[in-house]
Picture (cartoon, rainbow, N blue to C red):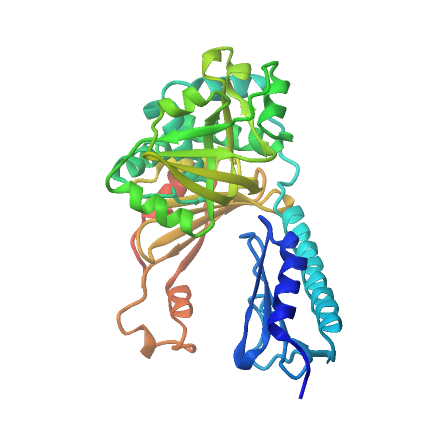
Length: 419
C-alpha cells in the first residue's frame, strides 16, 4: 500500500501549476478514478487542438496517457513516468510532467501562430486604398456593409450570423465589380500592414493613448442568439470589419454587444487614407479572433477578442475572374483564391451540390471551367466507386477549356448539364 496522501498532493500541485493556466492554456487538477489525481492540460487557442493528461495513481504510479491532438489513434499507448513513494516526490514528478506538457503546447501554438500570419501581399496603390476607404466610410448600411459583403464573396467566409439584409448586401457586392475590387484592395492592405495594439494605433496616427479599439452591435431579435452561439465556440472570423479608437463611436453602432480588440492586430486607419471623417477614428481590420472572455454589463455583452490569424490573405485579383464573378446570376457562395505560381481559382456555389470552378494561369488566353451537379438519385448504382458520393459528382462533372472572355466563361458556367 502507498503512503501517499493524494488529496494533499492534489492541493499542492494545484498551487504550483495554477500560474500556467491562462488565455492560451487551461489546466484542471481534479480527483480521478479510484482515488487518483488527474491533471488535464488543454489548449484554449482555436488554432491548436491538444489535450494531455498526467495521472497519479493511489499506488504512486505516475502515467502520461497518449495526448489527444485530433489525430491520435484509438490504440495509442501512453507512458509510465515512474512510481513515487512520498508526497514531495509525487508533487515534484507531477508538476514536472505538467510543465513538460505546457512547454509542448506552447511550442505547438507558436508554430500555429506563425503559420496563421499572412504571406507577403501584392502591393496596393495609395490612390486605390484612398478610394476603397472613402467607399468604406460611405455609411454603415451602404459603404462598409457592402465592402464587408465583397470580402465575404471573395473569401468564401460566411458572416457570423445569418440575416436577410446580410445576404442582400453580399449579393449586391458580388454583382458589383467596383465593390469587389475595393474589397480586394482593403483585404490586401489590412493583411500587409503591421500589428499594433490599441495604444500603438493611437500613437501611429498621433492620438492620445486610450487603451480601446472596438465596435458596438445593436440588438437584433433573430441575430442575437446566433451571435451568442458563435461566441461560445471560442472564435469568430471576419475578413473585414471596422473598429473605432473612440468608445463613444463604438457605442453609437449599438450597445447589445461590444467587441473589443485586445493585443496587436492589423489595421488600416480609414480616415488617414481617405482624408474624410476623421472624427470617427475608424480602423479597417479583419482576421480570425479568439474569444478571450465575455461579461454582461447591464444590457451589453462585452466581448474581448484577440487576433490569431489572417483572413483573405490569399485572395485572387484576376480581372477576368472578378468580372465573371460579378456577371454570374444566382450565386449563393463564392471565393477567389490565388496559389503558388499565380494560378487563380474562382469557385461559384450555385446551390447545394451545384457549383463550378474557373481556373486561370496568369494572362492565359484560355481558362478551365469545371461544372458540377448533384448526382442522380441512383448514383450509388453507377460507376466504379459507388460508395463515394464525391466520386459520383466528379464522374458527372464537365470540364472544358474556354476562351478567356467574360461572355464565354459565363455561358460555360450557365450551360445545362450534358449527360
